[in-house]
Amino acid sequence: MAALVETIPGLRDACDRARAAGGTVGLVPTMGFLHEGHRSLMRRARAENSFVVVTIFVNPLQFGPTEDLGRYPRDLDGDVAACEAEDVDVVFAPSVAEMYPRPSATTVRVAGLTDGLCGEHRPGHFDGVTTVVTKLFAIAGPCRAYFGRKDAQQVAVVARMAADLDLPIEVLACPLVRESDGLALSSRNAYLAPADRAAAPVLFHALRAASESVVAGERDADVLTARIRGVVAAEPRVELEYVEVRDAESIVPVVRVDGAVLIALAARVGGTRLIDNVGISVVGSTVTVDLGTLSAGAKPAPPAPPAS
Ligand code: AMP
Image 1: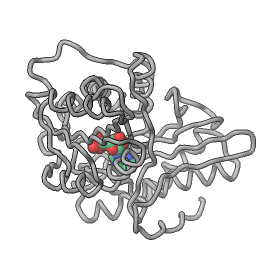
Image 2 (image 1 turned 180 degrees about the horizontal axis):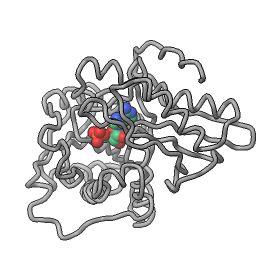
Image 3 (image 1 turned 90 degrees about the horizontal axis):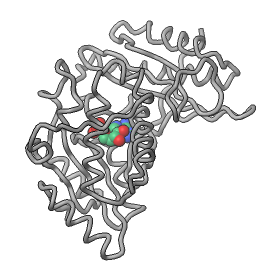
C-alpha cells in the first residue's frame, strides 16, 4: 500500500526510518498527472531501492505569470493508484502552504546551465525548479533521485546543483519515454486538441531526421537545426520556439557535434508548449543516438520522412 503523506515531518520521518532500517531511498519528484514516463522512473527507483517516494507538487515558483499554473492537470486519486500499481511506498503530496508557509527569502540558482533553451524562454523557471528540488532533497535526505531526459536541461541543472552543493543525493537520468507515434509523453499533452495531437509527432520526426543526418556524417549544428526547421515547417500547426545544439552536460552552445550533445527544441502546438530532444554522442567515428524509448506495449514509430 502506498501511504499518502502530506506533511514535511511525515516524509522526513518515513525516509529516516527507511535508512535506519538499513534501506536506501529512491525519490521521484513530479508535478503529478502521472503517465508512463513518470512510471518508468518509479520502476527504476523500485528496482534500485528498498523505499520509493514519489512527490506530487505543482510548484508555483517554476511557473511564469502568463503560464499554465492555474489549469495544470491534476488527478491525485489517479496518481495514487498509479503509484500503488508501481509498488511505491510513499506518495508525498504537500499543499502549497506546507511547502511555502511564508514567502521564500531564499532562491537556489544555478548559473550558466540555465542560460538559453527553456531558461531563456521561461525566465525564473529553473530558479523555481532548483529551489523546490533543494527543499525536496533536504526533506527526503540522502537518496537516489530519478529524473527524466525528457527535461534534459533540467537534469543537467539539478545534477550540477547537487554536485556544487555536495548534496548527499545521487542524481540519475532516465530515458525519455514516447507514445507509439513518437510524441514525447507529457502531462501537458492532455491540453492538445485532436488535430494538434495528430500534428505534434512532427517534433519527433524532425529530431529523428537530424539524428539520421549525424549518423550519415553531418556535424554542423546550423545544418542540423535547419534540417529540423525544414521538417517542422511542413506542419503549420506547429511553431518552433527554439531549436539548438548544446553540450549535454554544460549546456553551452556548440557549433559542431562532437562528444555528447543534445539537440533540444521547444514548440507551440495550438496553445500548448511542448519540449523534446535527442541525445547524440560522437566519439571518433562512433555515433550513438538516444531518442528514448517507446512506452510499453507501443508499436514501433513510423519511418522517418525522406531527407530533403
Ligand atoms: P513533471 O511531472 O513533468 O515535472 O516530470 C517529473 C519527472 O518526470 C521529470 O524528471 C521529468 O523529466 C520526468 N518525465 C516527464 N515526462 C517524461 C517522459 N516522457 N519520459 C521520461 N521522463 C519523463
